Image (cartoon, rainbow, N blue to C red; front, top):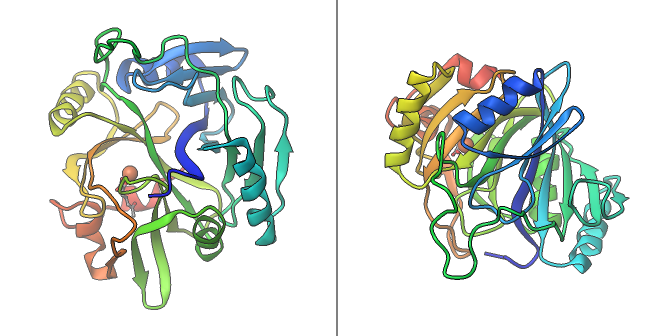
Length: 305
Ligand code: M3P
Ligand code: FE
């Protein structure tokens, strides 16, 4: 568990096709709060996050991901990681504080799988942050699926080996789980913390794809509550409630109105740096991903934004 360099996934920017409809989904279904709306962009956060926002929705003509923002422990870490990423032959850009809503100085680069990543040390604290002094569990009762925070993302892309090197060799993430088909690495689950994963990658013929972004729920009970809500609200559900063999998380996959896949995720084991990486064989991928069904489905493997 580093908790020294990169400490957490802080932000995720998504492209959506109808901003009003998307705000309604992320507020009423996922359970986020709308922080601010600036032109064709909406900023939202979950109730248990301290940062000003965690999800930005940009109205666009196609769905997908814009970038992920990782918080590092100190400003000096930014220069350290910028040099290490550049050492892998990747172009690194720097952006001044304030050029992204509430976020301090940033470094930005594109992974070999085609996904844009940013690192930042500082973010303004949310006005509606969790309590600090004699705190309650929440300021107002959680709504929608009761998401507590942005949890992780799963990205699909082609040069998995190149992206693997960035997270292992430059950013000091640990590999919690992986899967091979022969000598070819098919999936890689990484943590920068002591969680089962903060980000994961699956090999895919197209670069820069988003498979899902996940939100943390408190319990299996809340996953059941989310399932009840999704049916009552006619949400497009991919699969679930079910459980992952990988990470052991309790899950439902569903879609936002633009077709971006979301996940509600609870549980998952704790990771410590002495733990060995868990490895999956291709004939067990079904159980790895859907522990109860023990089989994959084509929509899950093929539909990405
Ligand atoms: C998860 C998770 C693949 C795996 C998905 C697993 C291969 O989303 O949160 O553990 O799609
Ligand atoms: Fe997931």
